[in-house]
Length: 296
Image (tube, rainbow, N blue to C red; front, side, top):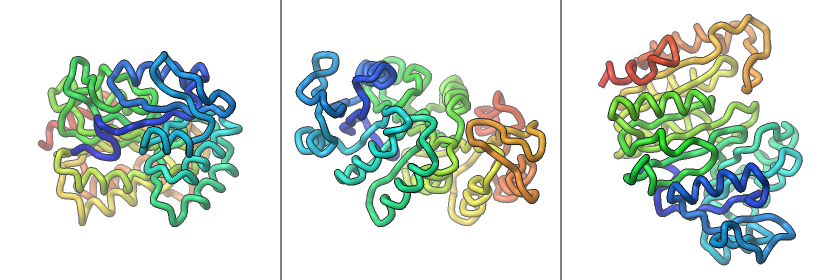
């Protein structure tokens, strides 16, 4: 099953003709991802790597190819509009990789998405990977910037605010032979599309996901909310790690712009909430995989 994406998922890439988007579009194609369209205004009619048709608009791309997921590799000043174009076209899932989208733009995006059936992952995230069964997990669906070869088809669902720590958890579970069902980087921006809780619910309902690694960071209350829900509703083993424990109080730290206020959002507060919910907490990033393995 997996969540969000599967090997058959048809993907379009907004910003496919840019250096960053083009590089990762090629890596996704090499991985076996079904990249069926690219969108760059003014470049409709061209092809990418002699195989992916490029369209002027998302609407044209959807009509012609039947894509259900859009990956956003558009520069920050235009990325908010790119997301809204996909929402307007009726796409099911948007994975926004772009870092540095203005907060005001994301507020408009969030307002527009209310009442729609569209789900947003990101922005400022590594993307979503459902590993395949081929060599180095190829044959799956890789959307974003995660290295494909570190994955392995398996049973652990990974959800993380941090990109680098996503890769760390993936590699550890691969080395342990557990593998992953789907890996979701939700991003660390102040306004993002999906929370830990949103993804936790999807993993809980997915028969292929047997256990979960949840990686959070200081600031906000998203991890506490996820823990509160998991305590009563999730019957799968969960291991967690909270980044930013060494950050001095009141300082903005990390890509999440995390700031701790009124005793909430501290690493200690988050760890306590997780432990009270029966979640195993790793003390260092190098112990995420072994912490999960110890409760299986």
